[in-house]
Length: 238
Image 1 (cartoon, one colour):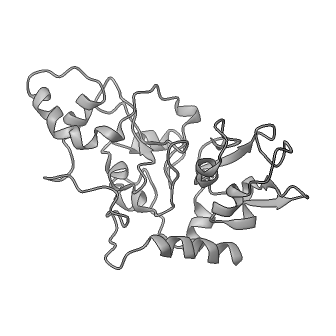
Image 2 (cartoon, one colour):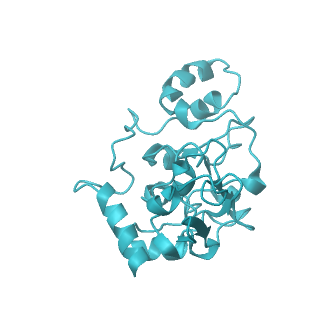
């Protein structure tokens, strides 16, 4: 119950009285004028050559250009947003509408560029920004590619399985005997269910079975090499 209380406090601290599903409670993103961008406009920003009207559509897509990352996706190792269906089913259900990325308050959800209109699927860039478990992306998904999960601590703790923490003890300050840190344990919304401090150096010991994979620990790690990283679970979300 302690871990759920801690997660509940974290969620409440980010909530606003006027929050509605699909809207950013942190006001970190603004709604696009005229609604969602045209699918063809998004394709242009992803790297397709603008031809005729596509050049004009690219201007309308400028507001979402920050959600698109110039990288080569590797589906087998991608971290998907909360509630993602198993691999294969997720790719078939996702239409690349970018709604999940639009409502993400931390911009953790990104899209890769693609050669076709439906080439890109969302992934989490946790090294740059963690998932704050607001579940807005699951509310915004129109196809069920992201199964809806209410922002309730009990449901989040039980259903969200983005990835698993992998610790490099040689890069970790306490484990390598270079000092005391505790940051990963301090920011973890699941508390000791996911990570606890052990030994005289208060070194972090991660419990993958209790971790939701939000990446707050990875984001907080002070080491440039990031002693802890979130990796994809075998077979996708459990």
